[in-house]
Length: 257
Length: 276
View 1 (cartoon, each protein chain N blue to C red):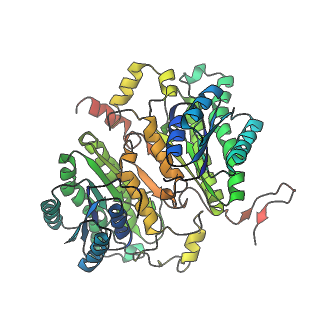
View 2: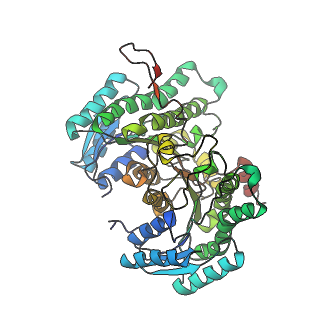
View 3: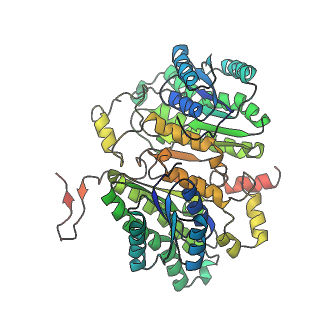
């Protein structure tokens, strides 16, 4: 088992990638704090995992709740070794129709929430002598995605935060990396896109499919485990090859040229 | 011995497998159940790696190859297929470096570095790739370098070759995706292997201590840590990863360490300043 007796906090783990991460980490021997805005979803995942898991309701944009979440992990399992920041929200909208309120909310959840979780868990990891943080960014965090201004900006921020923390906390033996998933079949994607959109996206992925939550979870496991002991500040694309590809090339390929 | 066996029964070809990172890669694959084809210019090094693979209970064969020569690569790949009958993973690790001031390089210097690092990688992709594809798919992992993304002093041919290996990786990933062959690269920073020598630096020789002070993790990598990253990319765990350059650099290229000695302002109101 690759995470035997490690303690992991996984935000957004009531569904989607976070749920896949929580389940996989528990299978690999970790004790997992299943944290989600949706308390019943978190509880259901924790119940399914069994005695290695505890559920906690958390709104990561609320500082006291994040402080509490990390406390809960320490109370339940004694320390914090791993943090996986999966909690996030997406919204497809023309920029000219994006209200300041929506902009702030998307930035708050995706970027500020990630910062708060890193800061609080990081404090424990510094005390404890080290750890690993995996942020779920997005390919929208390293390239532009139309109709996702706030999301792209927030995810670029997550990539920047990841690199900064990698340079600042390396001396504390804390590795900080991020994953940039391409379109992945999670409840977030299914809830914000149509099947037509997803079929089109699928056609444009070199590997010819959308990502599965389990494939993102495997990448998170690598980055959280000792197998990546010298990987720090990395931005790992798990996107079927989309980021490597020129957008123009994909059109030519689609046209059969 | 690893408790995992992600490569049980698979054949893995490692170029440059006779020393350094290549040997560490070969041994990690063997620990996880793979049989190894060790390709190296140095037969003694290759045989030593093979001996260690055999000790792990796996099969190993060695092939003496100058990777820069397409005819030698074609023949060595054919011999490998005759010996093993199939191929799942190719790791292009063979690499050289010549450290000089830019106008001191000879034409031969340029050709040898580009020949091994870039043309050698291509030769193996070209001649071993079809066997991976026809066997139902698999994975190619190239050992590039942080030099594929950031520059440093007095190694122009090396950096040019590694930059090119990075784009070769991405371009080949596009073309081989439909054949179920994923193509990725690992980009290590300095690793304590025979290839690392103190370079001629503008401000004097770069010492091991100086180099590790510039790395957020404050140390060099072990070859086994690069090998672990190669195994991840080669395994089914990375089934949605292709065309990717994975940094294994301890945070070296994530940002500047120019401010690493800078003491930030404290909560007690002490001003920011340089650590002495």
